[in-house]
Length: 146
Image (cartoon, rainbow, N blue to C red; front, side):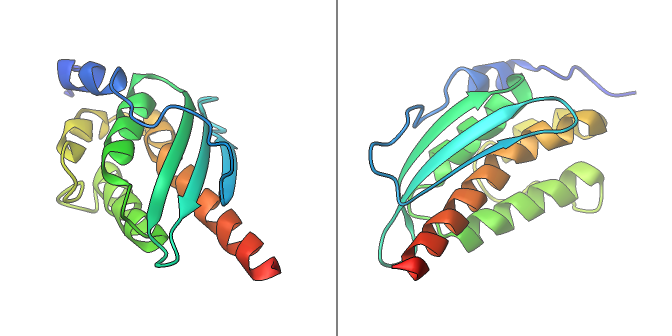
């Protein structure tokens, strides 16, 4: 039997999301909605010439799990590449579905373990990562168009 889904750690993270603002002149932007739960995440990114995230803006409309996941992402994303964020997302997804032993190396990822048995919540947890990756892709497409 699984334990409490909305743990104190999840709730603490959910109210501590960094970078909660739209950016004035982002290099890329994306907005995604989960088909399973209706959560919505919008992300703006500014990407350095090195390909690393320089600035991030997030708008989150999600359950506490999606918010907690966005808080973890927001705290770690600056200085990371799209590939770095993709690896973190894939490790987390594998952990949630039971094929990975660890949710990844980023601080607080382990706090999402409570959701492992709640497959209907996995999309909301992964949505912030998917949205930031999509915003990176938008920035790359715009750069190539120039």
